[in-house]
Image 1 (cartoon, rainbow, N blue to C red):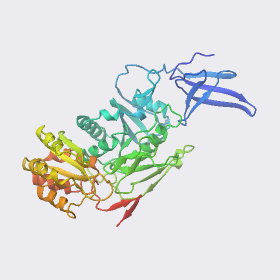
Image 2: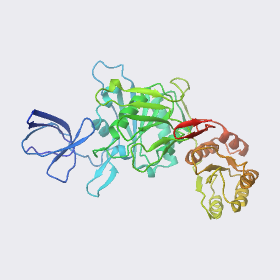
Image 3: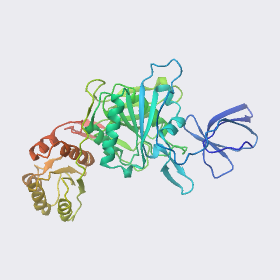
Image 4: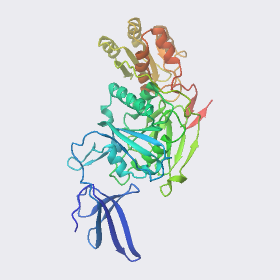
Length: 436
């Protein structure tokens, strides 16, 4: 049998009762005697090596350890298709850029942007691609200083002529990054964050469809920071979520991402057999190309904290963060935005020291209102800032951004109540429908 290495592109001809069937794809790791290959459709198949013809189409040399992070333009469009948009893929790692490490059995980021393009060649029929690795991390390792570098890279790519940006990102903290970029980059073109719930070398991977839908959105007229991920458990459509309203709502389901307190901007219907037949369905208004001038506003106050209240929680948690020099604090309270009465003195002390304290709700859906019950009114008198209907994580990122612009308490309060990147809706949403 022809010697095969992981990463080789091969063509297999197999005789069947109805004739010869031809398969072509990339050789994947396997612990069995079968040849496992990833087809161009994104699915994996296993084939017994006996009674088949194997042709090595391209020696890719397997996984390249210690690959340098490089920037290179990959002209994937066909000759004469200069009309294709120019997209920049900025890779930060995550499951969409990961594979199973068969030494440990765990998933780890090992693919560069170039690897993603090799694994999903369909991207080349949608746009001319320039890829760059910014980070190669799992998303739990993301931090505010990385957001600033990523925002600057996005700004530079757009300034240098990119028609759209795709950011590959781990799903666990994608909502935080999407919110941060929404505040930091005022964009005249689409900025699309995309990831996958299952690594690219798994048969049920959502990476291919998500990436193709992301490329379609990045080529559209949506000029906002958005997240594009599976909209159902089937391979039928991806949802387009505004970056300040999206949350991961399931640990492993392919349709884990949902828009909170707002319907998605729209859907992209997937057609694996003919990408030209893919279509959009828009559900709400959005900023369009050229509506804004490009602007980078990347100053952040990184020393902000998010505290989740629970029954019996000790307000010493808040006092501790104040003592550690935190500049802003978001509370994730109960119901309409409450903590127990014993927290009020700690809130008073924090506010008197010039530290804004923002109240959000664990309920996610609905709006904070501290005017209904006595505790809420006491918190308002203590100086709490109501977080409106923002997600707790969005409120945290917004507070970081606001404190990067000003430290004046009244201006902080005003900006936290101002709708800047679609983060404040003012309407309730239940089960995907707007409720007056």
